[in-house]
Length: 169
Length: 215
Figure 1 (cartoon, rainbow over the protein chains, first blue to last red):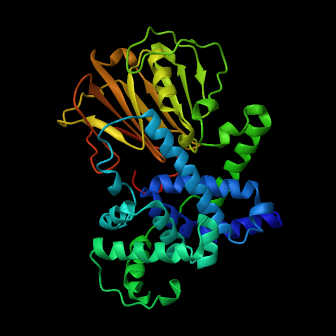
Figure 2 (figure 1 turned 180 degrees about the vertical axis):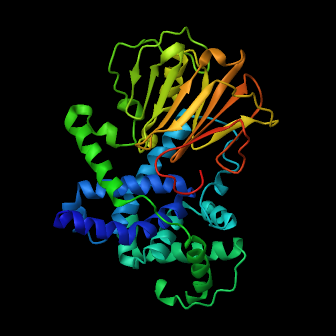
């Protein structure tokens, strides 16, 4: 295995789970997310000379996977116009994840959801999140605050006292 | 903002069990396959999810006329090979469907439905969801389907269209790592969803690739 290949393999192993979690949180389907993230990593390897120098390669992968997901859903809704098949969609195939939480996440506006996923699972700072999502840093903070408030309102919280204050600055 | 630490912790905790189980070797292989397709002139369509119909690469003179969705078209089974699937004639009048692992997101459900119809197999093809009879009563698959997962992770199904009871069609649900199949009666009310909890014995479930989590 060449140096670049080894470097990418390390990058993949270190970040695949966090990317999968972020994409799953946004699209609500773990199996589809896995497929999209794998495809996004494959594309990252195809352009590793550029992606490897990206400010946040993990974010590039997540952004690419989400873009692929948009194409998937567009085609699905264009070509499979079934009237009532979405009722159970929010509970689909995300092993171990509380379906109530998945449903609550899916009710959030897309931008809020993306900001939450990038901040919580990739630990991106506000500036980087803003660049990845394509919004102003102040909007990132607002989205994060509103999204978390909505989750608190909609999801019964277990007792969680871990100090994660550094996530939201 | 620290007021939300408990929410963040709960979200992280809830997702902590998610693991990406695809080995990096498969990512490299996927990249190589994509490069090959680009170099062979199939253009980026085979590597993108937009415009799945553009990924169709007819390799022989199959019937050109589109079949009517869900109807039983006159059988004229020319071999049709597509980027994401292939439908070919098998021995004894059977039909062989191969769903290529890793290309499900490129699959055009309308194209698959039409290809099966040309082989005399009416089908309802859905992506990311699966349709069953709303009343829970299914038609026995009997000798209609013989599914298996190939060594490369692709799914292969040998179908015997002649064994399908009249007035039925095949419901095919395509998911990233699995395919579900079931015979349904024409005109029966359907219940469609993406959950995987309901697995009656008559559903044929094909896992694509290395089994990861439940499908």
